Length: 279
Image (cartoon, rainbow, N blue to C red):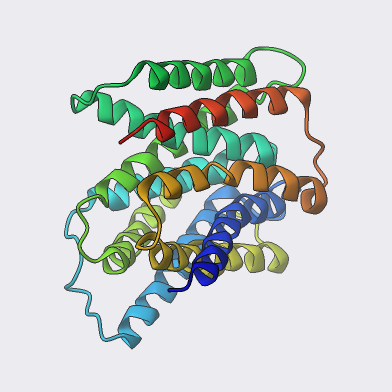
């Protein structure tokens, strides 16, 4: 794959990841749709696209991971993501999400016995200070419960990412996880009883989130991952909260606060130090 094509597809994948935050916030911020319906429509539309795509390629459902754990983690992410964006601003949500994802993977790595260099310890401490600053009580502080829900979503996404480390067929595994997540989301919708609010506008946004930003974004990402180093792939994902912040000003018309700016510098710079010093 030519370098320019790799760069173009990488940017497209990162924009798709950023679009998930934008689309979810647009659908939920004014009450056009309830959080559970958005999450269910999103995962259902993504699963159908992945199912049709791999059916067209002749890949049967029997291929892919059999474990349900990946689907459980994916469902935790979907629930926390949607529930938190009812209240959280788009930029704050993205920063909490991607920061929590990377910190979760860091904690798991430490639990597996991996050692951190001094620079990585400084980076991890800087990222934690960024989180503390963002969540410290004050005028611009994110609503605590919504912030916690997004952190839980980040933990779910981090664990879901780690389940794919041993994957031999990433697309087939993703299809299977999404299809099982449809079942789990359906059960969660029945358990977490919430007034159903649906509008054609919000349904359209949820389908876009599932088809383009979720299924489409993951397909693009898998296409370019084989052309990127691990560090390049990891660091490039740190640009997503910044993309979300810029897009939220233009599309969602949410102003950025000084609290977010300072926290973003701490969290993203700290995580960048951790990744760049990794082998």
